[in-house]
Length: 222
Image (cartoon, rainbow, N blue to C red; front, side):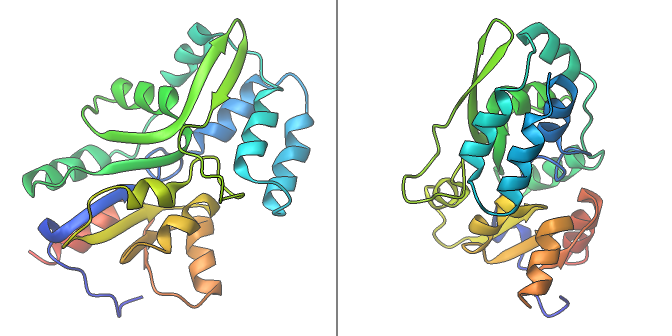
């Protein structure tokens, strides 16, 4: 891990996962557990973990088990908190002229609501769409890729759509949905399942537990 040499922050392009990277828990899983009216979603989750289905099929089937209106969901999202060091890290990035991007398999409505509740503005979000029909949630997948059977949101596609010329691409994430974009990043900050994946594959990354750890990596360059 220590063999990775970080560049100057101003030379970087930064991409974040959302659930359990910026938030303190997996918000998507929390929503499903709280508002599911049956246990059908569990078998779907296990099939996804075994690699039998992709996250697009997984999310679509899991949302079929949910019953929640938009106002009810908004009230729940008001309870979700983010990493307390995220805002100060964004301020550090802003001083260096960096505009980070969130790439998530969550939903734009959910992410933007949580960010707003926590006083975060102006960060670009690429995620799945969400429509409300009474107490049903209807997923929309604007960033899917026909060639990718694993992902609902093809994070690799979103990452590569950005102009990355002369930039060191840094990806920050925690889970299995982050593996694909990490293959196209120059440096990866990883924790939890993503970190375990890198260790199994004997690939280099930088481990972190909170956003403060990432801030400290870059503070050491100053």
